[in-house]
Image 1 (cartoon, rainbow, N blue to C red):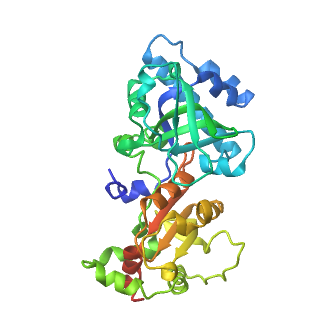
Image 2 (cartoon, helix red, strand yellow):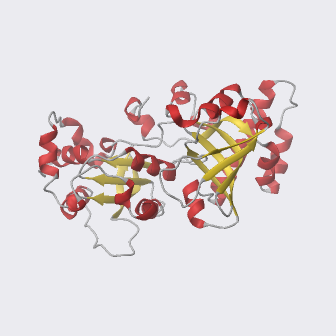
Image 3 (cartoon, rainbow, N blue to C red):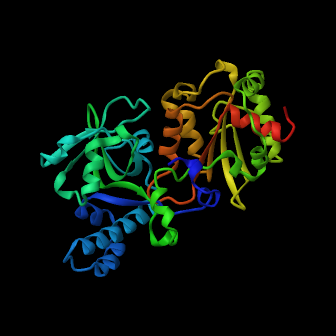
Length: 352
């Protein structure tokens, strides 16, 4: 499934990002809760007489844990690494290396596959006795080699030669939760939810009427448009004025007037033109260790939008997603506007 397979109403809606449990360390989860939350939660647990009771209790516990993460503003994994410190609670959705030995040993360790170079390996280590589903075990055994990702709430420990994650919860991104209504389609949308398409932004919606059948049509135009020119045209569609660039800026433009799903949203933009060569955007074009993406996401805007004159590579998309979409969140989303989409927007409004 891809983001195009989701309906516009689902893409643009706010849904609680839950976790489909594959691993849970109940002791660590309870210990991470505020004492008052823990005292109110424990009486709601069922006596665990079967797998259903254990599943219900697990989802209650994880929902409370994610609410606490949201309340304290727990960062994503990449943000936690940047913040530093001996130990830090985080929540994130990441790609893990395969761990086939999960079926054979009591304690395992495998790497997190990051696209950003953080200086040393990042490993996740845990006891297999806390695995709570066969599906979760299978997903961890085969890792991200088939395109999957795992949502994690954990504690990041800073070792001399590597970073080590002590997980509280691991599982698939999951939207099938009472807070999200009873749409059966939600159970299939977890991996792709969080991205919106450029045409979902009301100010760019006319692009849906523009078809481009030849790559030389959009490439010919985008090769000659400077970053400043594209920025001026896109910002003009928002009825706003571009700001002057300066060294300490967090983004290239910040707007409070972007309309998505009929509601006004804040949006932070990063623009990239052909100045460094007319080619696909890679992380190397986003500053050291993708710091430009970090700064843009750090504005806490509802939407984080990356625009480029050419194609936008998968590592940029993956890094943007890992910083914007996280367990316990509901409102923040991201959007990529590549050269073809930019051309369609500008052509739709007679700007090229």
